[in-house]
Image (cartoon, rainbow, N blue to C red; front, side, top):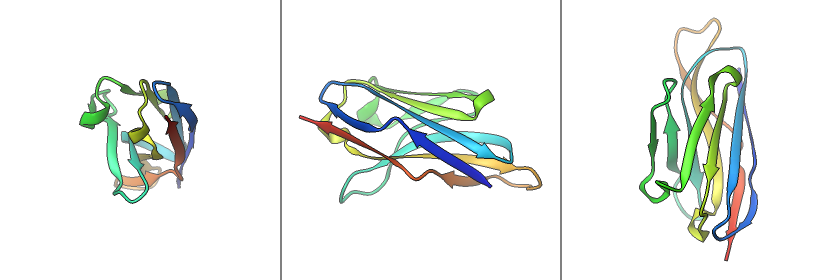
Length: 121
């Protein structure tokens, strides 16, 4: 009912930058929050950044000051600008959103397939 398509991952050197994008499509009536999670090998998935429909943001401590989350509500798209990348940022990054589709009375969470970010030293 809602599909999330991520793009922008890749290989970058330490100190470099990447911009991730995630576009939501489908019979979307409304999107509440949108967020990015990441999962490194052997570790649990963790929240990186979240943005509400009103634009309020919150970040995981290790990315504060380096990552910026933003969204374009007209395009149902969320972005993650990642600067000053470190090897420990290497992970698969997942986009997620809480959305309500036409004909539904409640919000539910949707997830993208993930995009690999590798920071080489």
